[in-house]
Image (cartoon, rainbow, N blue to C red):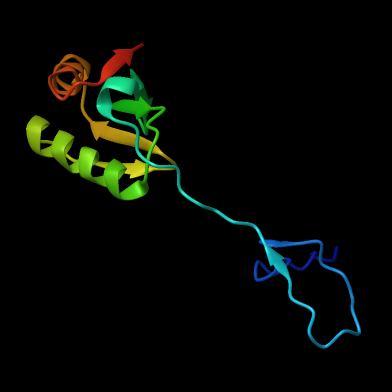
Length: 115
């Protein structure tokens, strides 16, 4: 049985790739611009407890903003709770079963929570 070779990712963000004899042809790239961060009063974060790898974890979803602001909020939460965590794919993961503590911190910063 033959294995199928993997495709390269170098042309992943190019749109409308065509063959052209024009030496001045320029590819059009997808623009992955980050959205500006909304103020805390306008954000409604979804906070829930999940089991990840058999351990309780608090997951915070639906943060609207730049990745630097997401990392900053993650760091503040980890410091406040005294635990580890990370941010991945626009979500913040906080280790432990600390939903009430996370929600109280977010409310003190002006965020609205649901979940």
